[in-house]
Length: 141
Image (cartoon, rainbow, N blue to C red; front, side, top):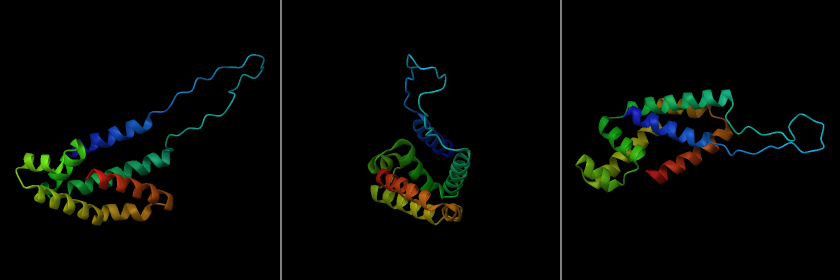
């Protein structure tokens, strides 16, 4: 289950890493050997990468501490994107039970001490980005 969460997170990071390529040709008649313009690096700084890695570890540890019943429903929903009905069929429970398990798992993750500590360390700008990601996760789940 942990491997599924790690692989899903890595896939998201790899998609973000893709950058658009720009062809840079030297103009004839110029004597400068340098670039014609500065290319902005959209990648994360080393500090941001480290912070992201720490957050990922905190989320994974919080997910690992969940009750296996809750963790199974959550991991199926996140990693495979199955519907409530598909998860219910796979786990052999009702769709209401799956909804309850997903709701409980989200509540426990939000109240998790490890994630609270991380949230307190976020800057205002990070909180805005995290809330957007949280809204996207709510749409998925």
